[in-house]
Structure formats: C-alpha cells, structure tokens
Length: 238
Image (cartoon, rainbow, N blue to C red; front, side, top):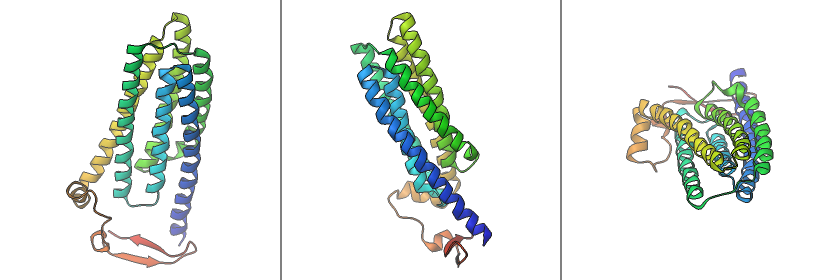
C-alpha cells in the first residue's frame, strides 16, 4: 500500500516539476527568439530554439511519467530526434547570416542571456535530484545543464563582438550551440534505441509496425488489480 502511494506521489511530483520547467522554457523561447530577431543575434536565435527543444523535451517527458520503460524510451527517441532537427535549423540560420551579414546588438545579447541563465539555473536546481533517474527525467536535467553552457557562451560572445567589432563571435557561438545540441541529443537517441533493441518484442513492434498501438495485456504479462489509499491501480508483473 505504501509503495503504491509512493509511486503515485512521485509521478505527481515529477509532473508538477515538468510543468514548471516547461512553462519557464516556453516563455524564454519567445523572449529570446524575438530578442534575437530584433538584435540580429545568431547566438540568441540558437539559444531560443534550444529553449524550444527543451520545452518539447519536458512536454514529451510529461507523457512518459508513470508509463512503462518502452513508452519512456520511445518518448526519449522523439525528444532526441527533435533536437537533432532543430540543430540543423540553427546551423542553417548561422550559414545564412554568414552569407548575408549581420550586426548583432550586444546590449540585447547580454541582458537577455543573463535572464535566460537565471531561468536555466533555477530549472537545473529543480531537476538535479532526478539526474540519476529514468531516461526522460535525466534528459530534462541534461537539457538544463547544456542551456547554462549556451547562455554563458552568448554572454562571452557579446563581449567579444564589442571588443573585436565583428559579428564573428556571435556566429561562432550559434554554431557551437548547435553542435552541443547534436552531441547531447545523439546520446539520448542512442540510449533510447539501446533500450528498445534490448527488448525483442518492443523492437519488433517499433521497427515492423511503428503505428501499432500499445502491447496487449497478454503481451505485457499477467497483471493484477490492487486497491490502496491511492485508489485502484494496475501493476505489471514480469
């Protein structure tokens, strides 16, 4: 009984936490994207898309909370793939700015990056207790860690733009952020694939018929219904 309550309480706690960091990252995406567009900063634009990717990570993480490991692995696979796609978009934006030129506004870069750093530090502290948890909570913690590195990079690049009187540092940090996203998201994708392939039934279902619904009760194994202070729940036994 106490174990059931503990599991449900943990799921509820994780959902509340993910909704909190989702809201913060979603808000900062709009702030940084608009600021980067107005301030002609590749670094801010890249960091805003990184925020968007993180918001999507948290959203899919909410879907995965309390579900079986195969669902979590598939959610993580989607997260990593999305980040890889956005990283490609960031690199394309940097390339266009190299070709067409840009004049980043350093004051905008500095203050918005400081705000983003504060938000990401707050999220990082909230998520730190789950850094050794399941794959989606760990992915959320990794996202916040990478974001802080990106924020510091944009702050440093703003100073270099002033010192060198050149947009090159801003373009460089935009490219670096994209590469950081590629590196971290590739790890998430690789780990998710490893989990899926380690279970033959899940791997077969994913590869042969990706649109097929969740496994039946027979495939999942015997299930038992129990009741407790948390209400009725279904517990799988393997």
